[in-house]
Image (tube, rainbow, N blue to C red; front, side, top):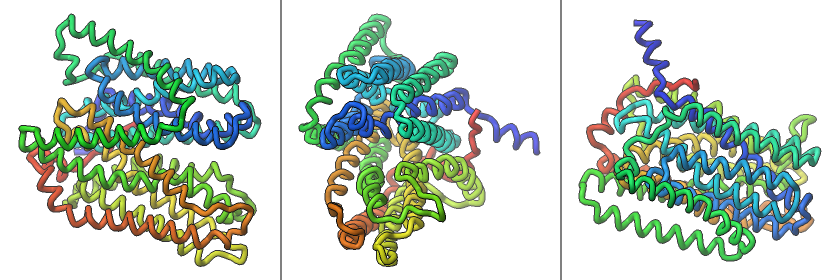
Length: 501
């Protein structure tokens, strides 16, 4: 009995371990640039604050927008492994250009990096989801492990960025990011056969069609770079463009759902659209962390814990640590609970994540009310808020990726995976809109702006609570939409924890 249990526990699907480490090194470069872009642009390149923050907004919007395009290209024009390596190559060259320290090569490097990063993220998730059949119970744990790997990359990247920013050794920082991205290419090349595409439209193409699509895919990959370079220098219309694309994608998905002939798949796609609305609400609040919540932390929170002052950048690692520790732990807890007969499924997890987000925002006004004489809230309230948000993220983000393999018809998998990521891009724009509602400090005391923060956090928390309660009420309907023979097996069968290697 012990032997059988041990074998089952460590029966990792080939390729999942490699993808875990690929995710770490691929994320590292993005974490460095994401956390350093504004500071580098203002302190080293001497761009104005307004110009630098606008550039950061464009960077985020294009990154998520290109995820959708990557989902379409992967498996149709280039295999997911080819597109991933091509994108990582662009990231390596991009980081090397930025490391030179010149403004001209900064924009070139940023365009190269952003194109590569935007296209290859979907590829990792598609390569992972293709390792499993729809009824394989190990899928969820594999995505939880992979999501933990991504956050290991963020932790290393944020930590390194903090060190090099303190010494202002920006060139060394970007060389570090270049090496990290190169390791991701090496790991992918070492597992080339294992990471081959499975069941994609490209595999059905004739030899002539395959060559034509390969050439077209390469042309598109490198042709996007000058387009992104051009748009990075004209950030004014980016928000309108991204919102327009999102609206078009939403209409397209609704049309595809309504006209889809297979009844079971149509019901699954309907569930996907409903859950997407919940996801949009969650991420719109979650992405206030580097915007409104960061400003709140700097101006209205007492960052002294004992004799240690918490640096604002370190606050982001509360989330990172929670994800790294919580991902495998959550997979283990789900395994035990399902083994005891508990029914834990996608609708429950989405509703719970929104309710946790609601509590995370609603406790902040309480912290403001209990603020000290200087008007600054205790750090413990902000810490608790980040922990609650992180638990909610674990319930909705990796599960959302795994959900695509269950709910998306074969011909729409890449597009639906990309559109799922595009939701995060739209949410980042809404997060910016919400952050724009925060009161300007303008040298005022914390007490002078506390009322404005308390009102905003309360309204956002109540909004998340309303959407979470709506999903809670819709759980029976969603279960009917997505429940079929495979889903019943999945939701009632224990999920073994997949080892990292």
